[in-house]
Image 1: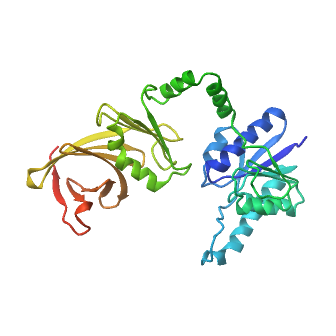
Image 2: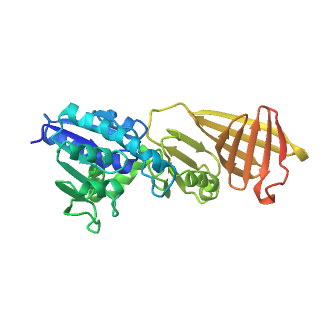
Image 3: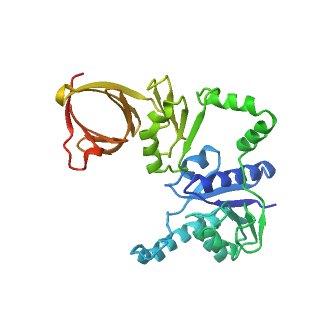
Length: 345
């Protein structure tokens, strides 16, 4: 039985969640084992791992350039710094084995473990192995994969490690799908009797997808569809845009501490006696604007904050600075003048 285990992985949930699943399983089977996670300070692991009760050690984040760039010249020194940090972590906890899950963290962990003659185990989640796991698999005592088609030497197909919560949900769906769906919808504040559209762009969020869904949401909502939008950690823990049309909602959720939602509705008097009403919805650093232009409703996301603020949504851009604002219709051309507005209350 290993007395001390170092698990290396991080950056995205694709690496972190399987790592946590394995760490939890090891803790349950070997309660006396010392389990330590090697990660970066910038990745999701910096928040998720401590919240699950595991100790961490950190290495510098060293992305591997996939094509020749000036970054190649700085790679050797940066990688050496990460390998040194990984070697210090392995030595400090006297690790009996290093289990790697790919990503930025695993490469220095594999190199350090090989130098210290510590056994390596590789876990590959993807059908196509990444650079780090291809490297680690060359020296690994064991290689596990999710897919049979994954081309790694001497690999064994074990499937994707799942957290207990996910396994329990799968079992519940198999035994009673309707009740499970209703319970899940209630937990998310959604109506189980209406269609639900889940939008997700990955653990760190897909910026283009996130902006696109805010632009097209009103059209989707007109059909009575509910939207559950999962964003990256830079978004807001929860934003609900209620009562847009047909009493429908957009719910945006992501991991993180709960923060208060600040909402403010302002009215603007614009050129040609046009009136525009805007509801600003802010959670932390995330900001949305629900712009009502006559009978049209636009959900716009904040894309810039400098001397003023810029919101983009569909065919429109909404710029604000102090009490003044400008509405641009992008379909009229890049150089077309905007509609000038002034806040009235």
